[in-house]
Image (tube, rainbow, N blue to C red):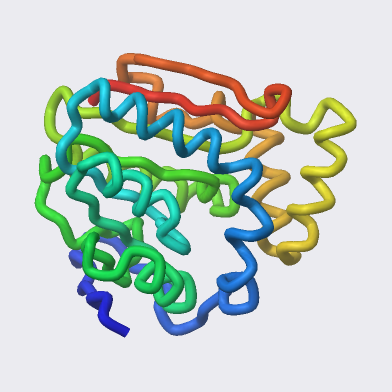
Length: 220
């Protein structure tokens, strides 16, 4: 593997980097999800291009598919993930075109105000509430003043239709802990329930797939 293993800053206890919860899904993640996630990724690329963002961090970058889209649009992109299996896929996807690192997103090894924008796509719903808060705190810290925070995840109405039943089944298949965190995320309002973003300036909001998914952008 050619990605870097970055030491976390000692401000909060890091999550475990030894157990890979995503090893079983890394190879099939893109084939299984691209149909639904790629339209949102392309939408975010367009937004960041229009905002003239030059340096972008993809938090919980997974297989690197989003990283590659951002690089293809001419941005300088870094990606981090806690899963070695996902990062191995990302290395194959991106090669040397992006900087990939094995990190805990709750205590990132980046200086403050490093990136013009930071994105996190379809990862917050699988975390516990305290972990979500710590990730968002770190994302806001590493974004330059006036830069953009981009969130892609389930909207607050994702579970109220027949499509929501399908979403619930998919999340249940991801495992007991994952599903418990998903249920808590939806119960507390999904993206509406993230208290850390309430002090930020909203810039953009777009719904996808009959309001199951949302893209939200904020100025830091």
